[in-house]
Image (cartoon, rainbow, N blue to C red; front, side, top):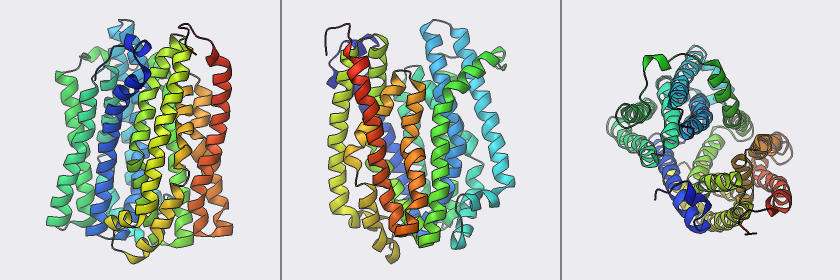
Length: 451
């Protein structure tokens, strides 16, 4: 499946997209399966309140650990260009600075999480009967977040080195470890929420050990003590490029806070459990569309840089077509099998009664989301940071958050669920407008004669 950079500009777009999208899809699949099975285990073996507790806690841990992902993405760009320019010293200094940034910032946020755990849980929506299991889950897992942050940062650097298979293994390891330990700690030993947190924490640490092993024994970036010196120009460059990624995660965290508080106000604890199931299904069911989006970016970016605008346009059209087809098939499955899907997660009659229709509404606009995802990814690939940021944040930041704040005042809990497809439609229209304008102006020129 490995390809050379030159092939991005010459090989058939359909074949290229398959080669690029498949590894990305497999990695996302394992990550989403891990979260999905984890939710099933806590729902079936502990109860629906456990799903609600996990739904409250995970956005906190992912927000902190996303610092690592943002630093990995931003620094990975700096590092890749340094490697391409044969400047290995800059590449190594960049990597060392990424390690220091990630560890320091993640540890700082973890300390805040430890000292202000109650306030943080309340902020993210832990209310009523959710508080106790959320606190039990939060205490062990917060200590493992620096390891998760370093894993997310390191994974991007592994990809930047061109070692995609190792990056994939780094995502697979925590999935297997977490599932096995869930069975031992929750089912066999009866440790409840603490066991679930312990299993998750150990899985993060095992991922960290694999990433550490890679950089010690397999990486081309052999670091020396001299590289571990804060380099302000490199730090500035990493920070600027990391901003888009961390902004997106920040908006997702704000959305989680608003959703959890709104759901509790209008539906109580079980409505947060309902959303916990839906959010896991969103990640799991849409993994092939997200994989196509990830596979599309290097193809579009390379050909845009080479001014092969005809190939860029072709890659946009093919990616949207394939992603829309898959998204439509996924929606059909959700439409007809929503109830059986929900019963896999829980036996709580209230949750089973509410979740299927909510799931259908949240997925209602999924056949058109390919335009929004591919469109935003195009502007990222083309290096148009402002438009990429605006369109990436458009669904959650511009539309979904205001709709979740407004619609429940008129429609109750139904207003929360219907906000999702409305936000999808509005963000797709916005992205489609800018994408069509770009394709009719910028992408009409080409150096290879293909339109």
